[in-house]
Length: 228
Image 1 (cartoon, rainbow, N blue to C red):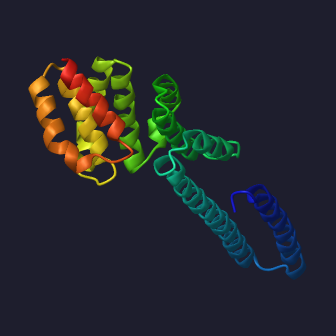
Image 2 (image 1 turned 90 degrees about the horizontal axis):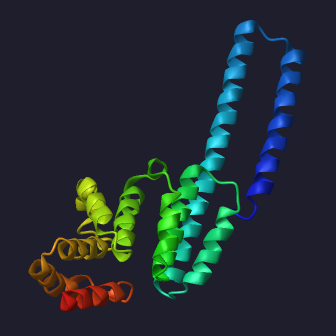
């Protein structure tokens, strides 16, 4: 559906124009009363609105399914360049600001995978967090703090963590995102000079959360703890 979206949109508008013409011809031919005419117009407009809404929902569902299908490229194949190419292809289409923000967030994650934190920060700066919803908005702030820490911008990272602590707490035990919150917390303890607390967190929690996708971060934190 994504690849044929423009064709579907054209077909929809052609059908709408033809249907509107026939509707107008029908009203003129049958000359209904004013009440019937008004009711018919309301019904027709409702039909158009519902059809457009259904089409947009189908497109949004297809978009989410496509995006979800790409996650394995980054998380399992660890092919960030291919993932970036796929996301950029999706961004070439005419999409809503909300969808564009989600794609930019995904691109930022890919550049974090490449350890290009400057590019990741640049992409995050382009996103209006008000265009994100739910977990995506929480992950936006978490990713921003994560990038700040890697760029040695500790004060900015800590500020974001404090400002959005309530949001972070909601996903702290989540199977997919809990590790990121743990990594941020260890970064924060180190930045604030709490070496023993950082070492304790790393030692106790690392076995529960470390995976192939985040082991580089835990190894990096281990080196930071050893060098303090």
